[in-house]
Length: 290
Ligand code: AMP
Ligand code: FE
Ligand code: FE
Ligand code: ZN
Image (cartoon, rainbow, N blue to C red; front, side, top):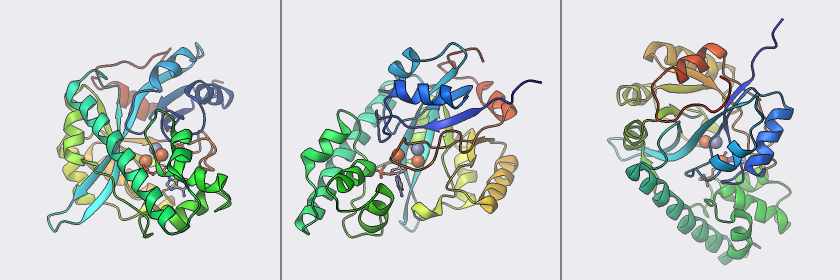
């Protein structure tokens, strides 16, 4: 009998806020038996080329990006959310400019959060964070790692809970992309937009089903149903919503190396969903046997 295919469509390398290099990420995926891997660093394509260079011949790699977005309600309530864009044209000027702007915003905001903490006597410095982020987009996990290194907190998870979360006074907002704009930008660049962890309430407020329906009408093609931040009820709800809206239901680990405890393939996408996704027209093709 054939082994079931393992498909993980959302992972991070140290091109953003994961801890594995893209080559290490691909090697770890190979060791885990993953057949299809999407590399989806935040607001960048920098991991794509080294990931492809490290690809074992039996593995398929999907090039993607997780875009930092915001939904603003008619009453002005802001909810941050993440949009995965797969297989889009990296040279598309409008989307490339938006990635650049998002990375700039991460830099300004990361610096401001460090200043807020340092001013309050927390042992953290900007050069320390810069050394961890390298040339890549700065994320709160880099701040968390710096706080662990300084001995302020025992682990990144505690850093999020006690210092970095949006509920803490040190938090500074990024200037993220309006999610409807992001959906249109990804589509215009030939990409496939999928709403990442739509019901991850632990991270903060989430958008309503009505907003997700509006996103579907704006060109969204998929919904991440199986995700470590979704409990069993969330998954049932998201699956029903995806079905009702004609969206592809995906699943993924959102692996970040040792910055998070979630292992690769902690959640996965079914073969039929994967096939439905890649059957849609896209600028880039998956690289590999399937
Ligand atoms: P940022 O994009 O800079 O706002 O930071 C958000 C990132 O932090 C996301 O990629 C999350 O996956 C990650 N994150 C959120 N909560 C935690 C946590 N408790 N521990 C580690 N990473 C987290
Ligand atoms: Fe992340
Ligand atoms: Fe995310
Ligand atoms: Zn992610």
